[in-house]
View: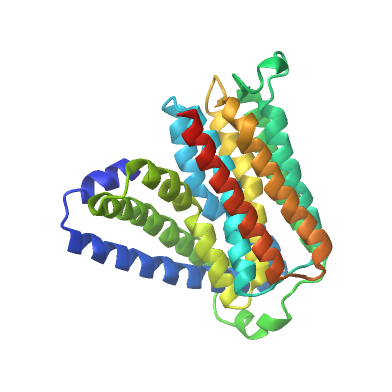
Length: 345
């Protein structure tokens, strides 16, 4: 998809590219507005909390581009890219996006539900590391790394179904946060119609992001930004753009629980959905080279544990100082990864 878009827009004049960037930024913003509105209406109609709608339906929608990129990479014989995409997205979602969202405004938390979902989030991250661990030759951990086998990928996909079912069960046992959306729930149209609108708004965000990132890449190259900087920043950022836009829009509209649910859900789905489906689709499994165990896995687990501790100490809100901690952790991890990659080349 990306290559096709790059070929299509590569020959266009710079003013046209600027116009494409402006239009896609507008459609991403509009799509996010609709997405948040429809998700709130749906949570009211179904009697589920916004956090659960965020952690299931919305995060499945926003992680679909990651899954598509990763599965295609795995099928095309680049399984390392598939795993790197999943791990990189978890680090970016939890550190940068949740951090920025809580800097804009304190994020309301349903402590019990957030704790349960966050336990699954940390558990999924740990499961990914355990799944990739070279149990037969642990001495080669940091040099050769390991593999996420096809069978483990299949197990992850089964766990994905269990996670969605369990999230809805947890939500059913808790009071809904629907008191502020009474007037929205009386709008015409069924829950099915709302779900269709929700899916369409996710599609608008995802397609716009798929067009925006290659366009910005080409513009950056024309201005003279080095290629390796573009690929390291824009490509990783691009797949997380739907989560970023959704989280910031949800917070601005006063639905912070939706943002928290969406990010926790996206992290869990990056393991069970993105890595799981990619591994299940590849007979040889996904390769996790030594660098994953030297740096990427520890960084991912570190940022997830920092967030888990944050929920534990935060009470009923993720406050701004904790946002600074999350963004700071993400910056530290990003700078360290640049330093390490420079040393290795």
